[in-house]
Figure 1 (cartoon, rainbow, N blue to C red):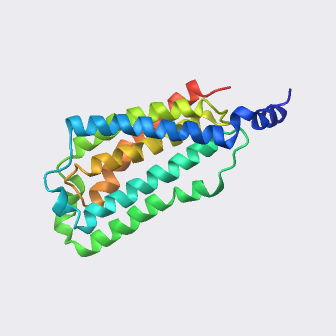
Figure 2 (tube, rainbow, N blue to C red):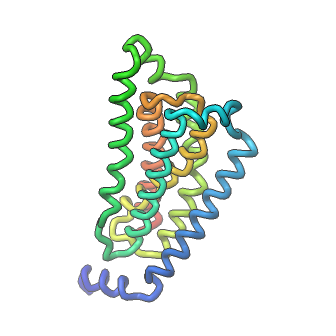
Length: 212
């Protein structure tokens, strides 16, 4: 059987129907995020000044970035579960996150004196960021990989990487509520580095576990 014929056959299989995949992804998101949230509140929790922080633009902006990443990457990953998937609008939606960060960084550099740039970039929780985000992403990543196995991704590595990106967005959203470093300089530096660890893990898991 030719590759295209195999793809067409898989795409027509009832098991790969949109409703089937949507149910699996909804279950995966609920389960993975639920486990991470429970662990977060059991071992980390909100930052002490959470209520006053909510009134600041820099703090709130972190959630605009992380939630957009989690949503767009999750929907793109679900799309990639089908063997006949096309990138669609969700690949473009992923560009919103770096665009938002770029604009925020430019504004931060304009409004702050250059003497404090380095301090704002380094922050006080860089190591914590690099460890906690990957840790919180483990359960969502595992759940999304399981959901992707219910489909037949044509590009297993890419599908796994998108699962890692989505898991990172969820983990970063949780971590952002604890992190006291709110500067876009910090967020644009350390959050992507932590995300890269999870994306690489997702890519490797996808290549190994999502092949057909």
